Image 1 (tube, rainbow, N blue to C red):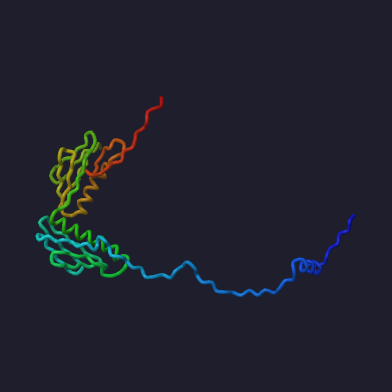
Image 2: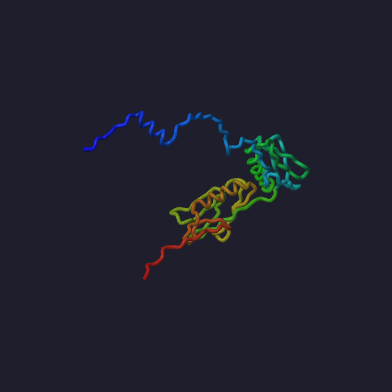
Length: 227
């Protein structure tokens, strides 16, 4: 058998030194690394809302009262009031009303356009009014007025009876067309949405209650068996 020679640790290190070369003492220096790609936070500059900066025309038949953050509007069709948040303020220039930001914050930028639209809806509502039109589609679907109630036949086992809120007028034409009108735009939209909720239009035959300008996307029914 061949004899096996075991080299000592000293011999092994000398062999590595002669093969790879002698090691030199290396000193590592710690250099602080600056953050790259993370800029310092800067103050957010909120641009003025394109809707909020538009002026509001006040007609001559509308009376407007400003009391701090409260606005009261009275016209030939009714009277409405609104409380503004502290982020916005209202200024009146003769027959023009302007809603401005009271501070430069992100929330003020959001409230600016919103409350300008709400204020404009009040002025237009008490002077001209709003309306929402609905249409009933389906065999046997019809609507009628009984006093202050709107009665709907929508294929249920019983008719649906809805009480018309104060300040809202409902007109029914040809038993299938409903017109909801009034001076408060939010109330009109809520009542029309409640009527539509009883039987939303389905996508196959289009049966149900839909808005007059609503487009119902139709689906294709089950295809016949392949021959």
